[in-house]
Image 1 (cartoon, rainbow, N blue to C red):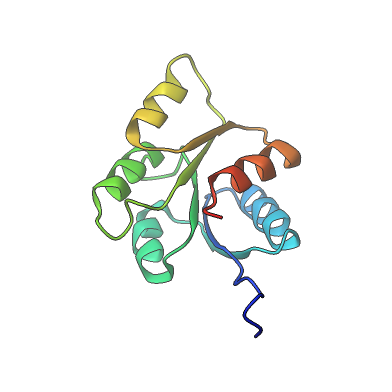
Image 2: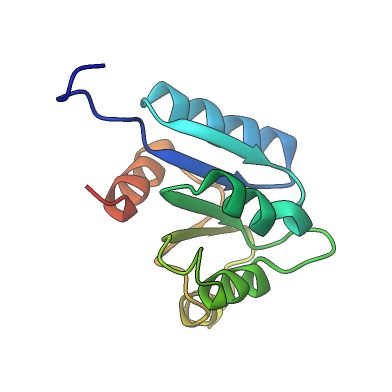
Length: 128
């Protein structure tokens, strides 16, 4: 690999919905990213520690665990706290975005997610 070739940024996608997870991963891979899908929120932080991603895309509605709790836990974890988190949620109620950002999310998208705003949000949060 030449010195000028950038190593693909690695993105962890935490999303329990199979269709959404596949869509996010397909779009990210098509844009040249290295993607690690994770369907189970309870495994999300362990997976993040194992793969050391450049960005975590976090669904907020996960079975058994809240994405907000996971974001807060990641921000308390010395190994994970510097990794930006893009929160994605279908239930964008009043005050939700503020609550999710207060937990430590660097970005926020409401579902259904359109591809262009999704990719813009991803690129905005990735370290250059």
